Length: 225
Image (cartoon, rainbow, N blue to C red):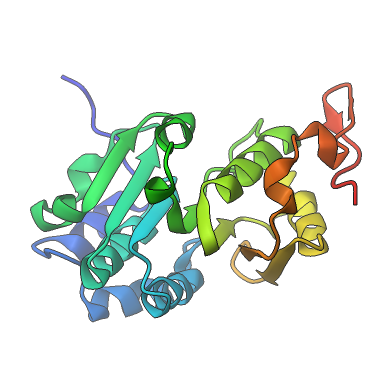
């Protein structure tokens, strides 16, 4: 029998969501008061998605935030796409599944499915950069690809940008200074970067055009201006 995947503090998570079509305010605020890595960013991202009335919402990397985005998609009359390499779709309620498209696999499955303007996203949350062995080059490729898949004015949130164990930490602060990107980094709780493309130039360059130099697999420079 196949073992179902689990998230951190899984039993507590299942107890929190038990019997709920969509998470209620008490659950949302309970998670806010807890100490897991994304807890203090849940209300921030929920407010952004609701405030911009995002209709197409994307998340790479399942977690408690997935339940928040499913609720926001329902309230906005939109659609939520959640992608993870583990089969977490069983943790969505029947009502959540009606507004959620779960993609089991790597992020390339999502990127390859976006072929027309109508498929572009209003909001994206990238939460798949914290594993061991995640390279600077992979993080950069994913972020640039995501920017190309966003609607004008779309917002990307990226988790774990303040964790110095990961190359994302260095990349995020360079993106913060890029002239074609509006960026804000919230430094608490592993860090959350909030990005919005402010120009079109970034869409029309390859990764090499941004001055990536590889030496023994290590990135030394980013973002040629």
